[in-house]
Image (tube, rainbow, N blue to C red; front, side, top):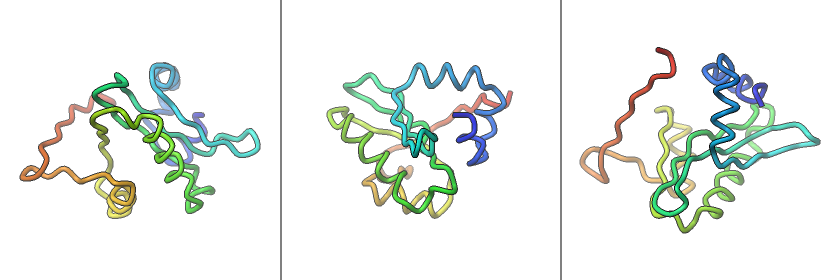
Length: 124
């Protein structure tokens, strides 16, 4: 699992492996496996009724471009289709914007749906 995070350079997860393992144990996770090798995952936090926060969507770079991420997210959202609001925060790259919009997510803008706020304590 740490190899997958390392493959996409998400170093905060690798630097504190016990924290990452505990986080995964306290989350809902959908895995993508190829021949017993973990190649992708989608992880979220939810109360199963009102809110689902999608925290991680990652696919090993050697498997990217095969729609694994799309399939993971679609299955994840279907499993939680009765949850009222799904939220995710991602980096500002154009490719992530296009990816999430293709899945039906709307970009939050201050004059539109609302505002998003973050307090990031990972590197304190």
